[in-house]
Image (cartoon, rainbow, N blue to C red):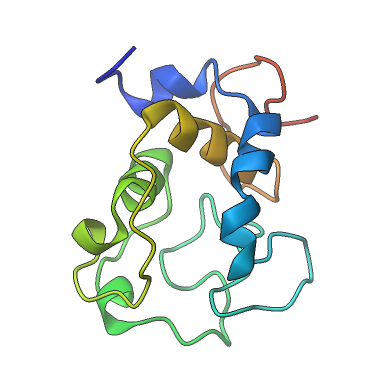
Amino acid sequence: MPGAPVAALLARADARNGARLFGPCSACHTVSQGAPDGNGPNLYGVLGAPIASNRPRFSYTYALRSVGGRWDVERMNAWLENPQRFAPGTHMIFPGVHDAWERADLIAYLGTKGSRLPLPGSGPGTQGE
């Protein structure tokens, strides 16, 4: 479903694959409840949280703080696709995930980690497993 909205992709996303895809992210981010921040903030509970405020002691860039709003699935999808385009001036040097299915799987995985959002879908490995 190239070009499909992220919500449509999430309906068939695989959180287990998202956990595997999160491997490179773990070089900078943790995702377990109570885990410390790394070079990037702990991402536990990030979905549904206000942007740049999930970790009050983490020093978010002005670029990200100025975006405003909450981490909904559309914003997380845009961030994962290209952090520099989403928040020009961010310090995150990650080039992004270009495959829409992989982004959906990553979002589904984050949805299993303290998400404040109900995510669509009940496919293999989705939230709740």
